[in-house]
Image (tube, rainbow over all chains, first blue to last red; front, top):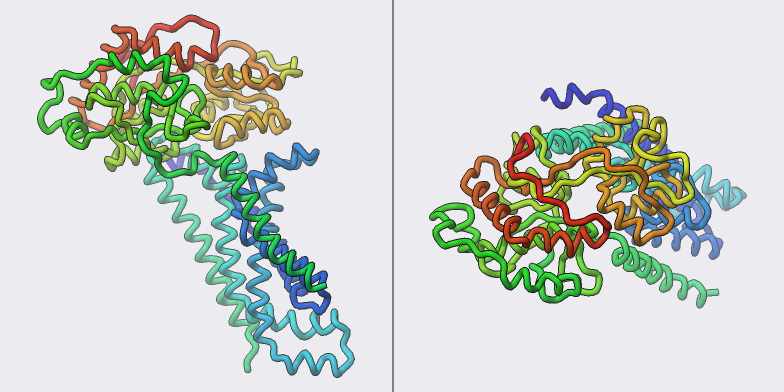
Length: 214
Length: 318
């Protein structure tokens, strides 16, 4: 196991990059996903169409394609961002589509009677979404959103293909010298597994705390 | 406007499919899992080698020792080789005839297949560089032809025949860059390298302050250099020479600053197979086939004359 002790510094730094990408992209994806869902269930046809198009686009185009497009095609259009921010933005946009679908499933748990009641009480559209529908939808969708966050964390590995030095890329580099792929990638896999487990357990705890007792 | 929405609903997935398909064809050739063996007579570059194939050496039946790896390959009827599909001049799928894989590594692999089988029957498993040792250890492939640099650490995991080629890393920059004249000027600079190439470790050894950015394939790295994602691109000098020849936006500066000895990767501990392949290398080097293959592939990108093949067993680990 000496090879991991000797390269602990770069490995931990790379793990830090992975966690940082997952956290920033995760928070952004939840925020953006909520907005997309709100647009998707709003009575305004243009907003509904845009949200539908957004979700369909990002669910149907592979993440690697989006990453390569963003890293290699955008500079030709005159937009050159550093690699890690580019990867985080693409991850957030991509996973927001999945978050939106998860929250939309939560929206269906909110009874139509409640929406009718909020209208009867004179709530505007934004008020009834913000005060009645979204809070309940989010609570019902905690575990599905947790699954999307796990997928997002695993998907950060794809950033290695566009030059971001995160866990997978560092494991590659280590293997290039040590030539022990099975050992090195098993350890990398175990680290990803631990991250997934932490997110899963965290989501479970949050769900228990925010659940609506009916 | 319900009609607009319907068109939109139909149009968006179609757009997504189009974009995906375009990308899949342009960039991701290395993702395919396996391609069938190549027909060497099918392509233009191979035409100049067809006489080499026709007259290629075939091993004596006595050399295929009973129960040896080479006898098993002969019984199977095909040689399973780990080689790239996207390495220009070394091992690249011909864009106009994708069944045909050409280059120095690919052509030597075909010659080895002829030596064992009597015909160039090669099955290609594209290795991610990170899985070469595993592919050999679990018997998925017979040999690795993949610009596989011989190192003592790797020799603990696998065996190497050869070296069959010596090369070195060089520096490429954008054509309008006059500050960087070679590896010595890369301190503190952003340096692009190919992921899983020797440059990943060689550049920090020479220039510890350089910041390394790695990309999966050579075309991506060249694109990144021309788009200004790094100050320089460090890669095998033959490959850089061919990139610079086809792309006026970049140029090669200075001389190669390392010596890489490429070996043929074999399963660890198979001494009979290793000496069999070394015998074959000695034969093709002596009869001029090695030089003909070099001239038709790597030699087409550089102006220097045909090099002398490295001495077999000359580097630690081989």
